[in-house]
Picture 1 (spheres, rainbow, N blue to C red):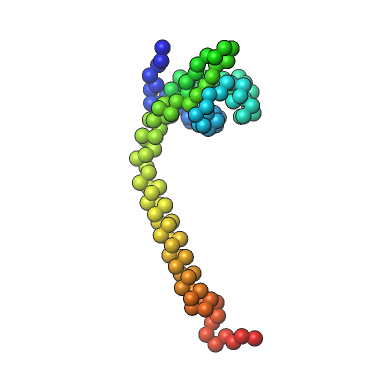
Picture 2: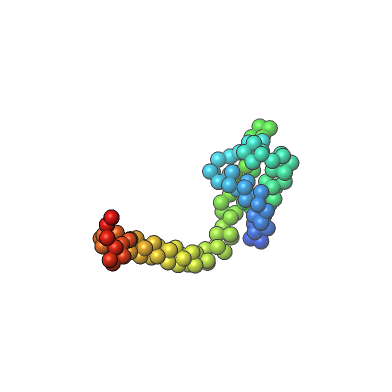
Length: 129
C-alpha cells in the first residue's frame, strides 16, 4: 500500500544533509541497491538504510524488491512540494541574474571602448620611452 506523503514530511526529510546526498546519488533516475549507495556515499550501511527509510516515508524515493535486493529509485513527484515552495522565490534569482548580466555587459562595453581609444592606460602628456 502506498502512503500519500505529507508535504511537511519531505521538508523534514531533506533537512538532513546526508539525505540530500542520497537524493543526489539517485538523481540519475537509475535504481540502486543499498550497498551500491553505501559504496558511492562511503558511509555505513545502517546509516544509508536509515536515510532511505526516511526518504521513502516522505515519498521522495520508492523501493521494490528484486530477488534478495531492495532497489531504490528517486520519486521526483515526492519532491514537488519543495519545488512548489521554492519556485515562488525564482523571481528574485532571475532579477539578480539579470542585474549581473547587465553589469557584465556594461563592463565588457567599457573595455571595448578603452581598447578603441588606444588602450586607455596612458595619461595625457605621457611619452613613449
